[in-house]
Amino acid sequence: MKKNIIIIMFIAIFLAGCTNTNVGLIDQDSPLFIDACSFDFIEGTDCLVLSSHNPDVDNSGNKEDLWEGGGLMTYLTVAQKYNISSTSIQDNSTGTGLRLLFVRGLDENYTVQTEIITMDGLTVVQTVNEYIRPMFIAGVSGGSEETNLGIITATSANTGDLQIQMDEDEAISKNSQFTVPDGEVMIIKKIMIGATKSGGQSPIVQVKGRVRFFGTNIWIETFDFKLDTSVNDILIIDQPISNMLVSRSDFRLEVTTSTDNVDVTARTWMIFRPNE
Image 1 (cartoon, one colour):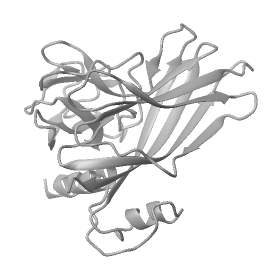
Image 2: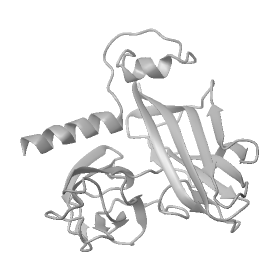
Image 3: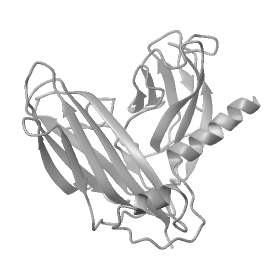
């Protein structure tokens, strides 16, 4: 039990960013800023690198979120419990796959909350907490395979809408949707997009960043870039001057592509401070 508590504490710190209390003066446009934030040198500043992945974007004309669920995520208007299950029977409390799952999200007041779920394979397990926004899910402990053997999903208990997904053999979800917790503000410093396609085709992938401020129903396009994989399969979006996102603002990356079966990944560098 003590070992599990230590692992949980490590996951919460490593994946959710670092709370910085030391004094440090570094220009945020400096390439050293993110390093300083990560090493806890910037007073009152947290940092997070958010990984996201959509393994199958098709040329349907429909935009998709950059997440493993495919399509667009439905944002909840009220907090709900999650129904969590796996596509593998081995992801259970005594199986060879994932046994314990860490869930992190925002409650009805957009405050961070967490819990640990004991997996039960194909059978749905319901969270104790109610969530209005997901943040991530991650493996805490497992059996002999030391990872999840099935696709693990968390859907809203009332409406059935998919909120977050973990693909096989990853032990962590990879989603671009993010909501600024209550009492904090956020800026996005850098985004790295990558795309691959089998069969020798060279898709053009369009990536749009969208923001919805709390209390509105309008998604504002903050940037729009195209990645031509015939030229390069990686696109780095630097934002030397970033718009500040206030508490409870929603952010997402949306993608479309010129061919089928395109695998798209992203890493987003985020910086947080208290809303003073």
